[in-house]
Every structure is written in structure tokens, then in C-alpha cells.
Length: 277
Image (cartoon, rainbow, N blue to C red; front, side, top):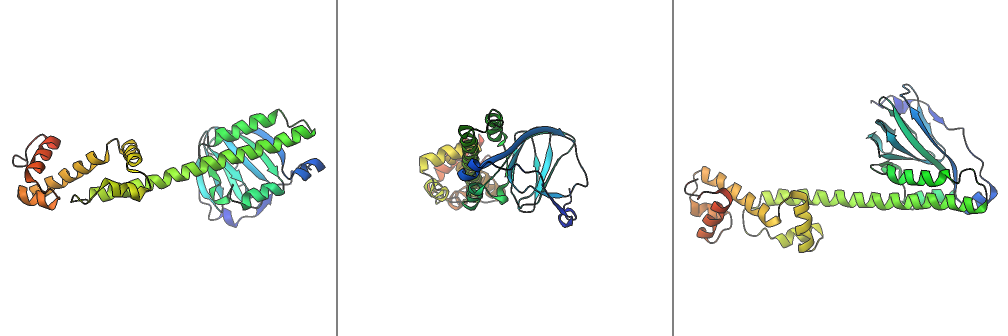
């Protein structure tokens, strides 16, 4: 969807708020409301400011979410999005979807944002619907209770949810960072033409021990680092031989100091000798 015009549209602000009890104000964080529903698209609806913190999880159906800080993302069952008090946003199903939501507020909620536990730029939480759903289920048993134990329990449920979302987000970010490094390793291995491409160096580049690097690499590629290096070097050898290089020239260029070892390895990988190739 093109949001170039929507960003210039008026922003409506939620007018539905629950007045917290004095006890809730004193503990610094309270749940405003929870809810669930089935929706169809509402074209033409302007951006909205909730005025509170919230999380929306997609139970079924598909749609999209947009905010000025995070941009536009598609949402699928199991995904969730975080809403912030003064962040204009918009979300809608493509056809129809079912969502659940939790809305909360308070000075401690603001502190959690200030400290980076939640962030407008990371409002899209892929696969986090389960965490939000667990919090929703726990809160349903407490929303009609106003005793001090229930008030404290509601706060703790929100804190536990934010903790779990933070841990899951950091783990996901760490996984993306490792994947980026492994892609760089694969590129370097693919261009490696001599024996100076040491597996230890690649492990250091990824910030892993050599043993851990071997496990991670095999999990990512399905092959050990050694097998991958040999495969890429033999592929390069085929190219050089096809260009008319001699077996000895090819072996030397690829860092094989023993021509006969190169010939044996070539045959082991390809099933034929370099000369026959």
C-alpha cells in the first residue's frame, strides 16, 4: 500500500481511556484494557495515535502494519506489533483477520521504552504472537478484579511479557547478525584460491570458537567448512583447467604444494582425474 499520501492525512487520537485507580498510579503501570475481534479492511481510515502502549497479535488471517518509525510490514498469524502513545500507526487485514490486543500505560511503561526494552523502530515482532497471547490469557482472569493482588499481578504480567519479547527480539537480532557474517564467510570461501583460507580465521571473524563455528557452519550450509572449501577450490580448478591451464599451474594457483595430492582430491570430489577432465 502507498503511504505517501496517508502520512499527510490527519492523525486521529484515541479517546477511549480507563482511569486508573490510585493504587495503580502508585505502582506505576496499569492495564487499560484487553480485547479480541474479527475485522475486515477499512479503507480511507486515517493514521491513529493510541495515546497508550499496546500490543496487537494476529490470530488468523493476514494483513499489514504501518508506522512512521518502523515503516510498512506484512503480518501473518503468530506475528504481533507494538503500539506507542505518540506514534501514528495504521493496521488492517487484507481480507479478514482475528486479532487480540492488550493496552497499558503508566510512568514505568515510559521508562521501559526509555531504557530500550521496547522501541518504535522495532514495533514489528515476527512470531511473537505466542508471547502476547500468553499474557492476554493470564490477564483475562484478572481484568474484572480491582483488589491489590490483582492490580500487582496485572503489572507483573505486562513486565514478564516485555521481558520475554525483549529476549526473543535480541535472540532474533543476534541470529540475523550471525547469518550476515556467515554469508560473508561463504563469499570469502568462494573466492579463496590458496591454502591461506584458514578455518580458524573464519571462526574468529564470526566471534566463535573453531568447534562452535564448525557446528554453526554445517547447520547453515549442510556441509562442514572443510568440505565447502574443497568444493569451491575444485570448482575453481575446473575453470582453470577448462581455460587451458596445466594441472601443475592449476594446483599451484590454488595453493596445493603437492600436485599429486591435488590430483587425488580432484578425483575424490569429481570422480575423474584432472587429466581426464
